[in-house]
Amino acid sequence: QVQLVESGGGLAQAGDSLRLSCAASGRTFDMNWFLNWFRQAPGKEREFVAGIRSTDENTSYAGAVKGRFTVFRDDAKNTAYLQMHNLKVDDTAVYYCGASRTSMWVPDYWGQGTQVTVSS
Image 1 (cartoon, rainbow, N blue to C red):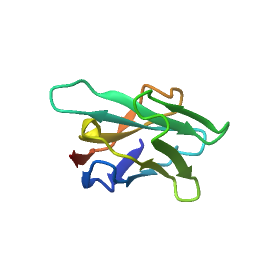
Image 2: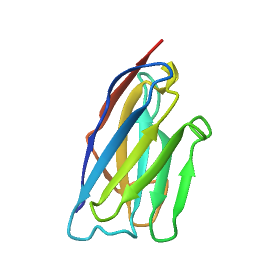
Image 3: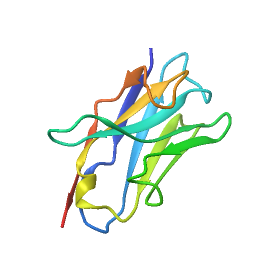
């Protein structure tokens, strides 16, 4: 079992920056696991945002955030981060952290989510 706790969401204006954190815990969790970020806007399906695995420095980004968001992690703290720059109103969503032993895009575990609201 892996537990994920997100933090760092909040209100921002367009053009602002925010950093989300995802703290992972669990007896089996280690740097070989993928940690990723998804988001779900009202009335829309949950979508992949970014993901990372430390073992091979593998990262992936959705096209809508590439160049504006950066995913990184601190394995000493079992924590992944999503640094978001140049926020847009369309980035408004609940952001979820996910973890998987085998997939960048299909988490086995989810966090509870953190709200990000961007105003114009």
